[in-house]
Image (cartoon, rainbow, N blue to C red; front, side, top):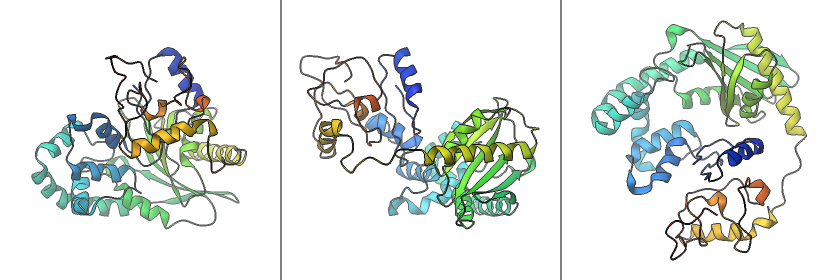
Length: 334
């Protein structure tokens, strides 16, 4: 089973499909879900994470997520607790303590959150302009190793970054040279405004010759990449980011025009089935769990193929488990 937030390339999905013919793709790439919300949707009632915790973690990853008013007062104390050990150090044990002893963790988190916010403001204040051209501006912060605790409040960080918005696309890079267990360090990429897709920039960093980046990706508004050399010169990192941003911009300019309002004609029945799902009705026989694999009723079942090849929109939402066909206790995935 595959569950992710990031749209995989067709070549990657093809490789996965050939290697694992029974693959079920539960990914939701609508920029509204987070890993915790997908996991909760998948397990259903088998385990229900405390709603306050779910909503706080959800908003920490997807800033546009609207937290219900009944949970709003607990978001800051929860994040104060989860960020207390520094950036990237929210452990499973820390989360388990929160789940098992929520009241005491919230009490301590409420005291810590002010420290987190002050630290965030201080880190943002260390920004420098490292590149400016007619088409792009790059701001950078290099976090010293002794300033990693407490962690940065990413929502407050993004709000501060948004104040730098201008007519020129702006990338805000955060270098955290703390060496991870993988031996790599992390480069965070964010944007001021909407003029650049930093997720695309992070992916393209992998293809920069001699760049040293070993992984990269993320959302259009927030992304990151890992680099193998913690001693790499700042100028080399900036040059790689600028080159990747230019390639991303060129690729975006070459994209075909958007689909017509009707969308994918071949997916008409799939959309109709999605409407039934939204109303609580079961989908067609044989659908195990993944809305991304719902085929029109009259389409012959065949070997696994990526969603795009089957004419089905790749960006849908909400998990669904339809009833299996009668008399067949182990239906094949559609």
